[in-house]
Image (cartoon, rainbow, N blue to C red; front, side, top):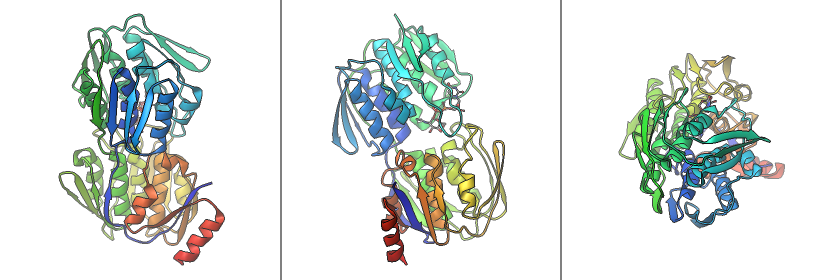
Length: 430
Ligand code: UD1
């Protein structure tokens, strides 16, 4: 089993270039099959979630041509199957986007219910409510969601809670419904805007993405396009925290600083220097960093996908910080792993109370999920001695060349497959 092994203690210094946004790419790839013409997408992140979704797209009959690791040409004219295989949904939750894209284009889709995820229960009732409002019949049979409509007709949909997935799914289906759909209480995340821009570049008529009211005038068909995906806000935030926690100095390039404001604000409150450029952010970590409080919220609030990286950073700041997780109920599981490094964190329901410590000591830990896995890696880079992080396939779902990018910043880290390789690393590093 692959793991990361690292020797902590080096401040990260230098520049890192951020890849395309995984969560935007997942929505955009699912939407790319809604036309019969060629679609070229670039700035794709080369991460396993994307590669699995591309396999699922090929599996239903679309032509998928990898032009290079970051560019793909997709043609959805020969889709022969509106049913997505179980195997893909189990690997990747975002396959539920096929419900919206296939329903929009073919008025029919069948996708296995996304399984439980280890950050909490993740129902899809709002997605289904949206499809029903558009006139689709929704059935759940043998663990699959089956949606079918004779005609999709526009509707006024009020989401009971702010959901990224439901907003994107409804936007896709409504793009090809008859009339004007209004989504109220829509999510406003940068990737909602990116998926809307992508659909508009295919001839859709979506207005208001990025605000909480989105208006979608349905069109009869969509056409081919060429589109470049926005930079990954969460990958960027992870490197910003890595700079802070290792007391380093990192310029994070190829970002949209506006998307990072919630993270920049918290790091500044902690006493880090955060300097914004047009398409870069520089973070200078200070020896003594202060406690602060954080509450995760839908965008433009502090992103839940940055919560673990922020918690590990606060765990090495002076004083007591409180972090409230208000999106997913089970997202503090990594705290037990972090305790092995000497952190002092008490979790009470949705609140983590963090008593900052002066140092972490290296330990053997396991990545419980994607973002918590990345957080444990940056904690290991700030710890005295060796840390190993197991179950890194979670991290590879969302971070392109993670260890290579960290290594280029001066981190002493390697991906190893065997105990012998780990022993060699220790011998070499001393
Ligand atoms: C997306 C992101 C994920 C991020 C999350 C919140 C992708 C592929 N994933 O996930 O990385 O952590 O947004 O920013 O983009 N909910 C319901 N019913 C629904 C839908 C959601 O109750 O029908 C609840 C969820 O359980 C959760 C909250 O709403 O508590 C937000 O979920 P949502 O925004 O839908 O997250 P995802 O789209 O699954």
